[in-house]
Length: 368
Ligand SMILES: *Cc1c(COP(=O)(O)O)cnc(C)c1O
Image (cartoon, rainbow, N blue to C red; front, side):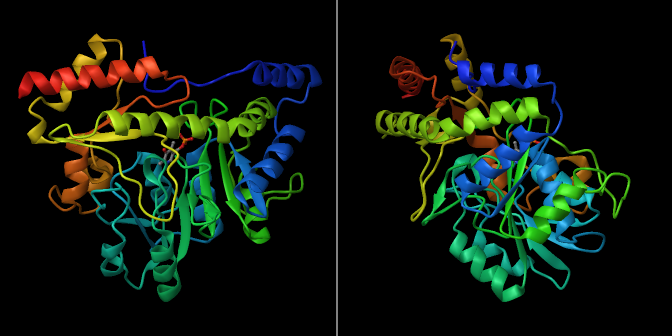
């Protein structure tokens, strides 16, 4: 079976966990500190703060910049639900802006008309591992004095120009969930160059304190354990190798799937690199077979595929009730109907790719 995602766990990760178990320091400790140092160095930011999920990372980022009731935060309707829930968690209003059909990222040309007096921040999502056009976002943020919180959960190691995802905005949010490019089972990180924000997030992850029993503000238990950090430290050493393998697989798929009518392949925008958290194609009506038929044919051959995401976020009731309607974000809605992600993770072999390509071509031929 070629799964759509597969964590890669080596001897290094196993040994590292064992050492933590033997040390007796299981909760937040020296491994978390090491991960924070290594992660900041990798991303090119002054600080990184480890948390227990990417969702917690986004919640912390929104909290630390002071976003709350009455504020508006601009983001995309085509992402994982965890992009938007933290906006609701701090009591702010998510203001959605449709996506660009080629990159699946927020359509920057449509952001300005969504900005109001209440807008405080933008959360661009580097979807599938491809950074947004940051120069354009930065110009808008500067003009309207907005904070930028990158949702870089899928884009560790991706470049925009000479800078890495997570070092572009005021704060960057990452996830170390089991299916991400590098993982620790569960986990999250916030990156920033602001000491003030890094310190506030360290308090927020620990009941609003950095001194035992002195609580300066509201907080949660968002701490990462040293067991998880030990895995992440080892994974981070391998991230470039993993990303390279993903890019190579993506390149091969793109070469071999070219010129199939009705099939649209992923495109990387200029001045950036794509780390292919997902390799996502569109099955358009011209393809003949439906997305479901193609996914079933792949499954029959032992190939897993995934739909990220089957519904745009404004279709979920707790978002829809904010006043959103079907038809409001046509590109996000179309993408939700057409996208299919194919396996590209480092365990995918050349033979697997040949099988995927042959299966897709056979389905295509049966239609024409
Ligand atoms: C994975 C992911 C998150 C949330 O991360 P968790 O660690 O699962 O909480 C947020 N946004 C995007 C785009 C993601 O892919």
